[in-house]
Image 1 (cartoon, helix red, strand yellow):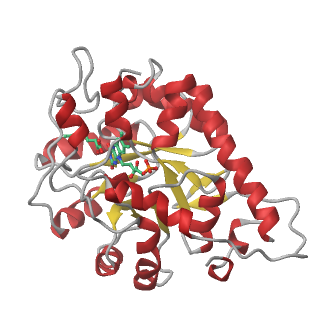
Image 2: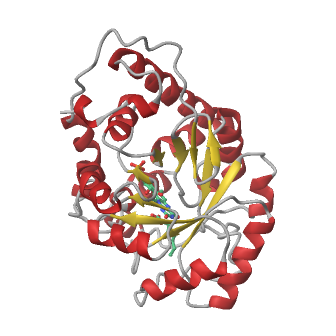
Length: 322
Ligand SMILES: Cc1cc2nc3c(=O)[nH]c(=O)nc-3n(C[C@H](O)[C@H](O)[C@H](O)COP(=O)(O)O)c2cc1C
Ligand SMILES: CCCCCCC(=O)C(=O)O
């Protein structure tokens, strides 16, 4: 991969402390396995917001897949379809949603709320028509994070010939005026499940429930927005306390192995999303590479469940983690 693009995919904001904190939080946890619980065969299937998944692992929305591989987002979607899981398509996807949908994966669509609400409504209509099953609204980006690698590399725009293919020639606006009324408007604008991505504070998790979110994603945008923000795994318990089981709570950031998935599930997440590992799979081998990445996570999770004394994700409980 072009090293400038590799830096875009790998990098975080500021000193990259939060980027590192996400993976460190998993490295700090240890599993206290149970034994003699008859764990085989395992069943990893999960349903989230009406979407059936072969395992509780989804593909996080990430921008610009054509920079990673000529198959682009359609290749990523084909990998998701082969693995029986869902892909969240970024608003900054470099291929049209109709083309990505031809891969046959279950798709959710990620949206940065746009001040041009007529365009936003049209886009929601377009992705709904293309068959997406949920809207993921990213709420942690009133402004773009300060990404030093990109600034140093002068990476400020897509190369000629590439564009955010679902924006009809518009730029994506990150809107610092964003507030809960924008979420209320989106809630009224769609019958699709509405999932808020980028929640870290328990008070915001409670507000998300009050404003009709169907699920939330505990996320710090993979350490790309506020450097110094809490690691997502460390934020999870308080968020779960605030939501009190009323809606599913998903998590992303720093998940690199199946045992990381196990830890997040045991601490109460309904499912996880992975970002950079999928991009690396795509870059290395297109759709096949994405599938391999997901199948590796599945095999590791399955193996971890067996060794920790669980037959299915629902058997995992917080007492298994220290
Ligand atoms: C290269 C890159 C692009 C991203 N683009 C988006 C995006 O367009 N929309 C969004 O909501 N999040 C975006 N994210 C954040 C991811 O959805 C996710 O929160 C993060 O990657 C999870 O961390 P991980 O990469 O450690 O798995 C992006 C992350 C990366 C690494
Ligand atoms: C101004 C829009 C750029 C797309 C941002 C994609 C993204 O979220 C990222 O983390 O990168």
